[in-house]
Image (cartoon, rainbow, N blue to C red):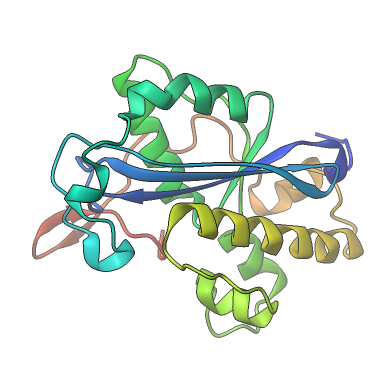
Length: 211
């Protein structure tokens, strides 16, 4: 926890899902690895969720696109190897990490990683910003996302965003994971174990931006 941030290996995770309810599944995952302060590796794949996709309007992924894709179970070991001994990062981490845990728990395993949230970091270092959604932040940091709301390009953009945010953190004397404890970061592996939900006319839903 006291090592400089650049001494950690990070993996930025972005998932696209069939919907946003507790019962929905991952249909695409993007992973971008950061080592020694640089992007060093990427993993991206569509995933056959074995159920219908109702969230197509958000990410553009349709049922026919995942028919021949591997199931999460089929790529779980590859994903586990990619994120082994890393600190995870996501924009609105409660959303992505919770869906990761849903999938892993179906396979009788779970996450045991520290996790950072660029949404939460942005709210702390940019209290003057009127919004903290990913698209807005990328615009402010002059980062181009060529295919927004797709897991691979979102993860890559979020990695670039984190690297620039990291410089601001270090300028404020927040150059270790331990120093971020003032903001409740990093999250521990049990932090999203209990499902937090919001009520709507359609029942209980998770939200990408407001948790």
